[in-house]
Image 1: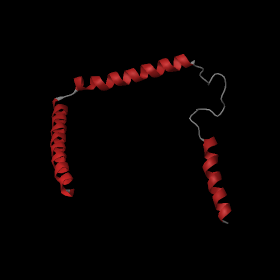
Image 2: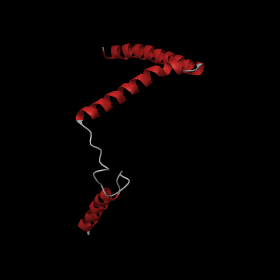
Image 3: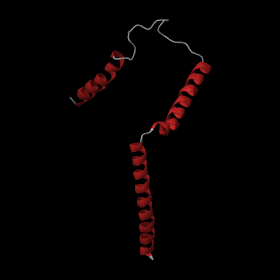
Image 4: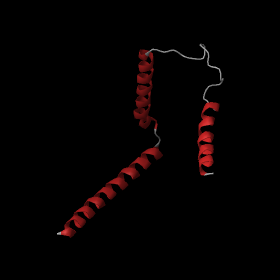
Length: 97
């Protein structure tokens, strides 16, 4: 009985992998496959990465006043927590002596 249960679980996990796919059709033809060279893939990946980095570093230029207030609060809380951590570390490090 235990073997049948394990077999049922294995089959139920493996069969749906073939049923569901990310293609719109189950039939893959020459038209549906996109053939790209390694250079085209590398170029696309590089441009995508550059676009993401450019977007990330240009966001502060689009911030509003409330965003800068949040940044100031975050940095201030980090400075306070770091100074407390440093003081507590030196205090507890000296306890073992």
